[in-house]
Image (cartoon, rainbow, N blue to C red):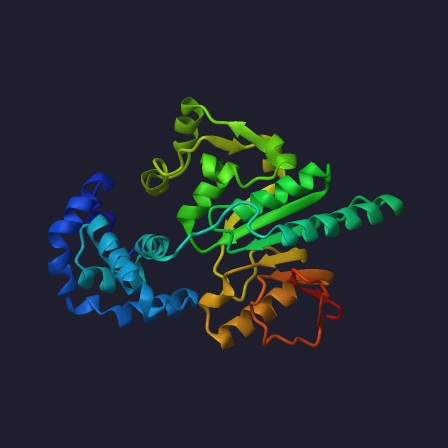
Length: 322
């Protein structure tokens, strides 16, 4: 947090009282000079590149109002303090972003990554070389369902010597991803051969896990993290999560990736930002590695150092030159 803002100047309101405050103060706060939705849309785009469509204006307004009320601020004060206060900024981003995800969302992509990992491990066994790790990066991982789906699929094939990195710009969803706790609806999406990595979750374990982390994450994740099951602990040694803004030039890891999965995220960016993002992902992709996009995404992309994989259900590109 920037030290220009004293901690004592921010009044944190318990989450249980926010709903009533929203009802009492929403009319007043919307009449502030700084409640102009277009201004806040521009702010979000400048910060993380996201283009929030007009259809989500109410969602954006509620996120701004919720953040202001949570810290006992007006929207004017929120706007003025955002440039100097990283906690306010992160809280607003956590509320604005839509973190929709589910397990095994696109099975052809999961299967393709698993096959790539199998081939990599087979080549290393033949060469008696186990030094090179198979790196996978799940971009915009939200609450971790895609990342854990990949881990389950690879573990079901008894693969080893791999690591999976999940990144997102939201600190709140990353806390949920690290906990690896989900509800019964999410479990129903996991195929039978991966159900072995689902473990029952007792209330005692939930309470203990929810106590990990700082005060802010406790307040925002403790209740919503409660689920009916958790990801098997055996998967966690090869999976990690990191806060990363895809608009940043600096990558989240120094390692080149054998597979980069970036699905259903580019559509929130302008076309020129999509090109820049894809160029950065290409740099982070190892020679011979793959970038997997969602079907129908970035169809304009024609990089000279990548070739598109001929596959009826995939939008995948292989790096053929540096």
